Length: 85
Image (tube, rainbow, N blue to C red; front, side, top):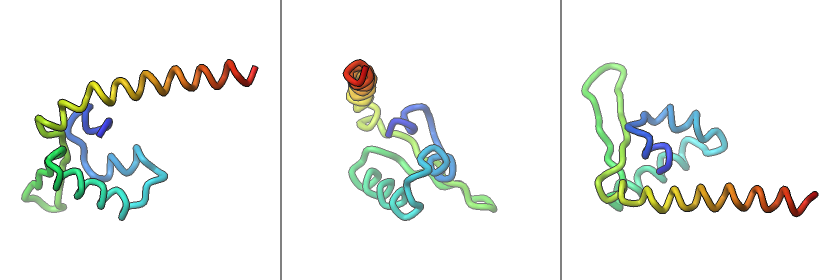
């Protein structure tokens, strides 16, 4: 959801940004998020096929949670580095 919070994103772009995630896993996660109403899937009628994913309004409301997790993660990394010194 973080990458989608930056704007509409195509499947292959997401896959490049998440290299450890398999094609099947990413596809399943996107389908689940769409079913839950958190993301929107837009298909363009063209060849080759083009599909973009974006956050829905309710998905955008999750942004403060993502920001909090990111801030906590940065603090935790700093904590771990300090601890290892």
